[in-house]
Image: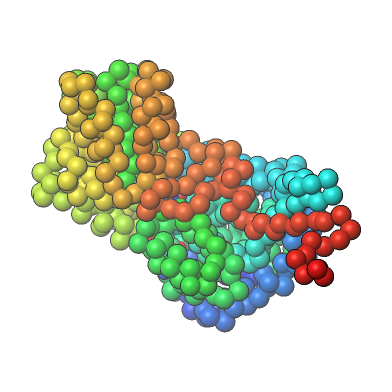
Length: 503
Ligand code: NAD
C-alpha cells in the first residue's frame, strides 16, 4: 500500500471532518509522487454541505459585524502564526518555491481577511440615506446573499480561498468552497483555522473533487452566488448555469495581457517588470503580461539585458531560499505549456532567445520525473501567432517589436494591445507619467500597472474586462459583490399619497 506524506483529506462541513468512500490523489509536481488521498464529494455530501451552510446562515448573518470582525481577526492571527507551516503545504501541493509561498500566498490572503474584517467593523456595510422631503426619506441597507459557492483555481490555492471567503463571511454570508482538484490540501487547513478562530459550524465548508463536483455545487438551487476563478471556457459554463438560476456571479478568468515598454523607458526597470510579468510562479499567474511590446529603438538593449538576467531564474530544491522557480502544477499542464513552446518554434516560427523545450539544467534523481520546464523567451513575435493569442499560463515571454519611428506609433500600439478578446491586466513602462496615464486610459483591461507589475494589495479591486471576468475582488468595491441592496421609503407625513380619493 502506498504511503503518503499527508493523511487522508476529508471534506469539512457542519463543523466536522466528513469522510467519503471515493477518493482521488493529489500529486507533488516537483517529483510526480502522490502526496495524499482526498475524499471526493458526491451529491449527498454536497447537499449536506449546503444544508449545513443554510442552517448556519440565520445566526451568522444576524451576528453584529463587529463581532464577526473579531472572529475573523482571530483567524488572521492564526494564519500569520502558521505562515511557514501553511506555506510548506502550498509548496508541496503547487510546486511553488517556499521563498514564494512563505512571502506571498498566505500573507496576501491574510491581508485581505484583515481588510474585510476591519471594513465591516467600521461601517463598510452601511447603506445610504436620502432626504426626499421634510417628512419623507429613503434609506438603503446591504443584506447578505445567503449561501455562496467558491470555486478555486490551482495557482494561488489558499490565497484564492481567502480572497473569496473573507468578504463573503465578513458580509454575513456562508460559503461552500471547492478547491481545485490539483491543489486540495489547503482546504481542511483553512476550515480548521476558521473553526479555531470561532467561526460557527456550517459558516465555512469545504468539499473536494473535480469539475463534476464543481458543476453540482454551482447549479445547486440553494446557492445564491458563485464566485469562480479559473479558465474562460470553464467560467462561461459556470456563468451560464448560474444565469438559469438567477444567481449572482463573480468571474475571475484568464488573460493575455499586454506589457508595453515605451521608447523612453528605463531598460533595466522594463526588463525587471517583464520578467516579473512572465516568470513569477513559473508563469502561472492570471495577470501575466505575456505580450511584451518593445520599440525597435530599444530592442537590442532590451533583449541583451533580458538574456543577461535569465540565469537569475533559479530552479532547484523548493525549500532552498535561493530557489525562485518551480515546476508546473501538473502533468497535463506541463504537456500543454510544452506544446505551446514547440508550436512557437515549429509553426509560429518565432525566434527563440532563451529556454525552449526540455528540462531545466537543475536535476536530481527525484525531480527527473517532475513537471519542470525552462523559462522561455521568444522574440520577433507577431500578433497572429498562436503563442501571442492564446493564454499559455506558463513561463513563456513573447516579445512583440513595434515601429516607434512614426508619430502615430501610439495609436497603432494601443490598437494592437487591445486586439484580444480578453482584458484582465495591462501595464506601461515609461519615464513620462503623463504619457503613462493617457496610454493606460486607452487600454481595455480591469487591472493596470504603471512602471511595475503584479502587486495586488487588499485595497486594490481586481477583476477583468471582456472575456476575462465579471465583478471584482478586493477593495471596497469587492464587498459590494457579496451583498444585495434593500431600499426603504419612509413616509412620516401622516397620510398615504393616493389617487384613489373621493372627488
Ligand atoms: P479551470 O477552469 O480548469 O478550473 C477552475 C476550477 O473550476 C477548478 O476547481 C475546477 O475543478 C472547477 N471546474 C471545472 N469545471 C467546472 C464546472 N463545469 N463547473 C464548476 N466548476 C468547474 O482553471 P484552472 O486550470 O484550475 O486555473 C487556471 C486558470 O485560472 C487560468 O486561465 C488563469 O488565468 C485563471 N485564473 C484567473 C484568476 C483571476 O483572478 N482572474 C486568478 C487565478 C487563475
